[in-house]
Length: 87
Image 1 (cartoon, rainbow, N blue to C red):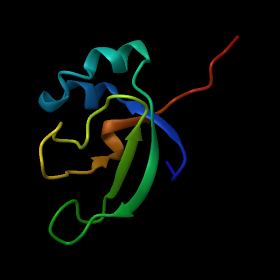
Image 2 (image 1 turned 135 degrees about the vertical axis):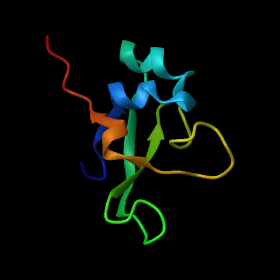
Image 3 (image 1 turned 120 degrees about the horizontal axis):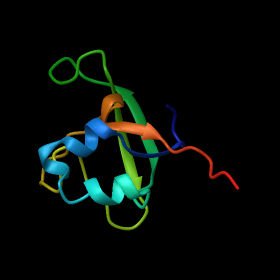
């Protein structure tokens, strides 16, 4: 997953308790966002794991913790790449 990829919540991400508001739109394919930043976690949080910041189209969760003040970036397990639409 790289910067510029279109993503949505994975099944795991939709099951997180803070994602209750966006679980249904994610399953229906209505929640889409773009990865804006990708970096390795610092030594205190998510050490060695990639962290992703996502800008959602319309309304979407600000962080992995929902819409709380502090930002907890998404991990690879929380997101999945949106596949192309087939005709």
